[in-house]
Image (cartoon, rainbow, N blue to C red; front, side, top):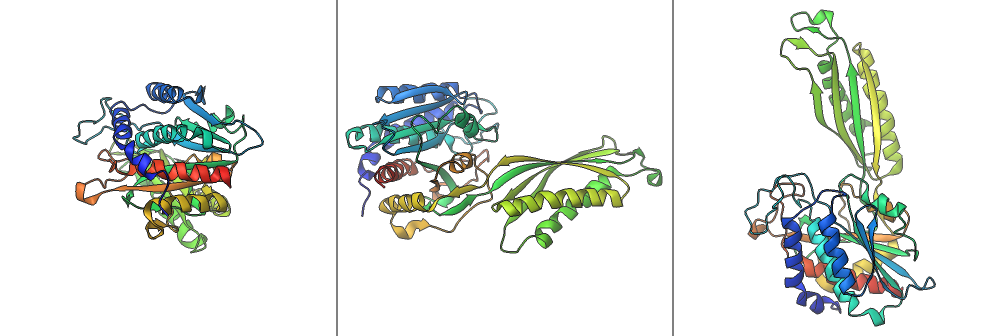
Length: 393
């Protein structure tokens, strides 16, 4: 069965590409999406949506439909923020803001969201319930989803189902990933401060070398995943930064390690935190030093509920065909839409945006990241179809 929204979404393609390129040229960091929010609010207002601005600082909410609390309310979420990256693409729509770039595709998400708004507005008389559009700030590690939740985005009317998407440069154009259960990982931050005894590089026997201790800790941390986790339960411990010392002939007294912890299973998450404390402290003690370990909780795992996933699968299959839907892929990347899905059953899916022939295959958060914009109208059609199905279910 072909999606009833596909042709109408395709007719919007040029318009939503223009929106995406405009947003790409003028990217804004988390909680600074003032221009983007204004564009969204103006577009929604012109379409007859009830518009709320300043939700979660710079977020925008659009309501369309009955508003009847006895009918279902379906939330569709689109994140708006860019990244502190200098763009290296040589394209007419390259970023005009030095050091800031839409390197994760959130400009595409906003464009899809506006396309969804336009298409659903044409069917407002057919909606059996309420559509709530959530244009979210600050997804990139600043807690934008939680800020909007605290400002009541899931209430008034209460949300029954939540749906979202992410364009994916690792997935070919014309495909989608729609799966139930954990889709993306919990992501936590790690900081370890090693305290030794500094001194002259020529007399290591008179010191406790914080750099050496830090190096042993980095290696030892990898044994946690290799030897403490069930082989069928994924986990990641990455030390991404080590800062210590200022001179070649001085043994450093302190060393700071910073890293990231990823997991899908809450029990695995708890075990990783526990073992990191034990291993880091134990290695430091064995080498005569001390280690202060701090784990800062980040986003929870993004977990899709079975029924909304079935609706999304049907909608995506109507656009691509069931043979183009991957139901097993998941990633240890993190996503703060998880905060919404922890409170409301829903589905978050990946939309293929990769085109190797055109060189559109750089990873997310890369200064050369870009997408095949043909995916935009596909995302509009899938989300509109899934939203209508969710209202009826």
